[in-house]
Image 1 (cartoon, rainbow over the protein chains, first blue to last red):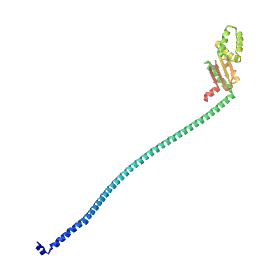
Image 2 (image 1 turned 90 degrees about the vertical axis):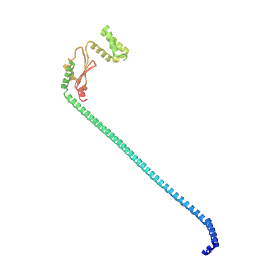
Image 3 (image 1 turned 135 degrees about the vertical axis):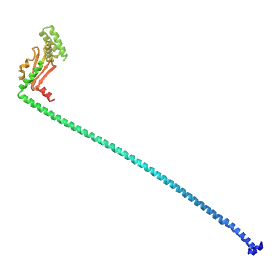
Image 4 (image 1 turned 30 degrees about the vertical axis):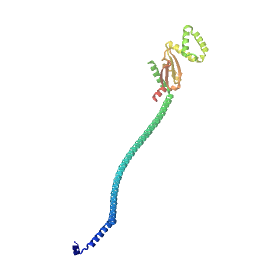
Length: 165
Length: 121
């Protein structure tokens, strides 16, 4: 075996020493470099994963918030439209009522004015009529007083006839 | 008045039936003085007169005309019987014509004033 090694140019002692060195180096590297490095990498990986997860979660939350926002805005829009529509309806109704009331009042005032005018006209007519009657009556009386005998005769004759009847 | 007209008229009628008219009148005037109603004697005597006229079957007639000339109308004077008591009165308000009231109830108003009032009512 040692001949074989020597023929191949391999010094087994050196090989052993190198092997021991390698093992020691492997141990040292494993213990002080690989493991902490791996630990660091693992931690980093975890952090990144956590970050990614957090990001996803945040994205999800943002999406949800966005959806909620859209929903709220839509609802608010609907409510606002409803309120505006109701307000318009109420305003129209109110305007209609005010219009009707104003119309009624105007008609009342007009009717009253017409009645008043009619009453006044009637009063004037009655006044004129009374005045005319008075004048005619006075004219008749004056005419009769100029020559009353004939009228007296006629009226007395009528009365006498009435008495006999 | 202390007593009503009807009371006085009734009392006079009762007395007039039993005694002579003169005595009845004398007693009645004394009664009026006693009751203090002598100041209403005109009204009371008129009421008695009306009663007497009515008892005789006559009517108490008031004739109102507008002027003196109308009173001379013969037709008007002869429209009533002798039993009736007729009072003639001049009322210029009538303008023309006549107003006849019988027993203070029925009225025949044939005056121009009434006719004009009816016409211009």
